[in-house]
Image (cartoon, rainbow, N blue to C red):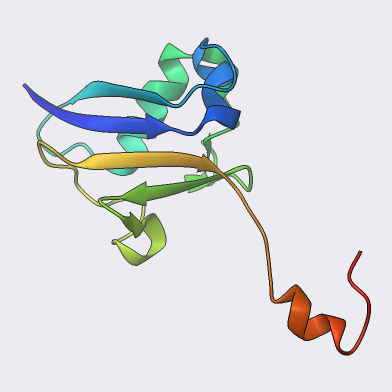
Length: 112
């Protein structure tokens, strides 16, 4: 059986029944033809707190709460959730983030 490495950032650790503040790394089994979406669905099935956090099962899309990276590429640039996983892939699950060029904008209006 093939495996992928799953890295989870500390803010999401409690959803995996782990102590908050710790970076999690574990291997997950995959079967031939499994996609990123399949893996995320399996993780949500194994960890009830993840249901509705990782993926919206009705739309088959990531929720706004997380971002997923496959082998150092944001999933949207790596082929999307239907990308087939292969043995040795690494998946990084991190909380959604936002940002911008606050310094540039500050010249026109104050940043909060």
